[in-house]
Length: 119
Image (cartoon, rainbow, N blue to C red; front, side, top):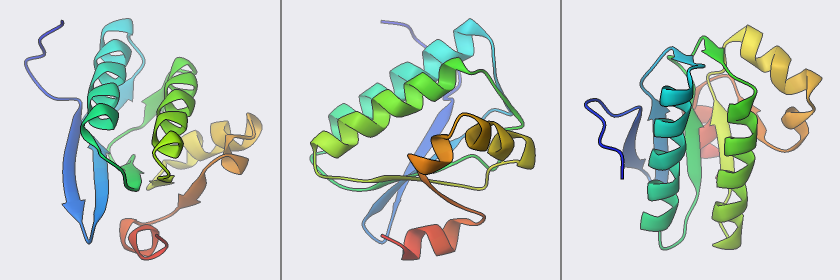
């Protein structure tokens, strides 16, 4: 098991929804991607059920590998009858989601509060 000196994902519960906020502005190196993947997997294992909002407010760059990690995470949550929604994507990241059609797989919101209200 890899030990990280700083968490890449901060988790809190707001109104019954688990909000996972990325704490790094670049998710591009293999090390960071691996840490984010592990932390999201741990989050999924720790949830009995429920909905998750992924907040990308701090993220400015992201590797395409993260798309596969997000899809894997979403499938884990869906298997528990939960939903994963995204918010606060930088315009350049939103464009990647549109090009890859991931915007059809995830509901994406501009801000956190409207996203929370949608659950």
